[in-house]
Image (cartoon, rainbow, N blue to C red; front, side):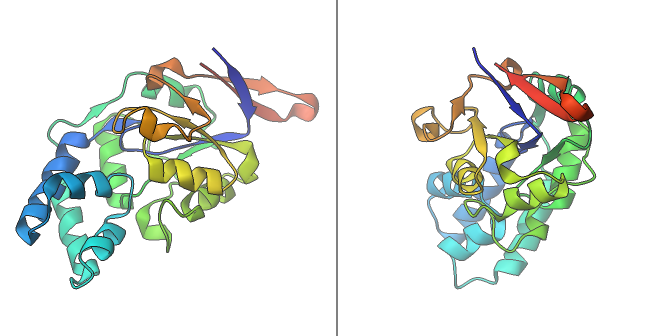
Length: 219
């Protein structure tokens, strides 16, 4: 058990709030087979990374923008098996709407659709792959998230499930909680706090001197 105060929380989406692993795996496995790559390696590389950067990394000879359009179309169409993680709705409801957001490696259209299908609110100030020039493990997405919430990076807590996200958050100067939904516990060992499940995490609003709102996270 432990607790920490912060100004706001930045959530990764896939593997943290929603389980979209089945669909993501099908899409990237199909893409890998079509282009002659090892499906298992491509699926592992793609998780937690912007699709355009995955394509540029493994297939620089392809038109990455055209591939991105096709991959997004496939992911938008493949929603079978998508479920919300236990505790996600309760946790978000406990947080002030202006003190949390989603920082995802997916596109805004894809993130919004998955949140709606999962019955979760779509934050107005969402950070998606469309809105940053560099994705995770670069700190840019999380720095943008902190700016949108009007918070200093050290005052933010990040909840992630991928090594690339952990690296990005720490490079941004943020505390990182990790959940072993997609990667093993040893692969997430760089996180500051390693949870077993999202529903371990509790949030409460704390008022401090001057009426400032603080978030108390406990686990």
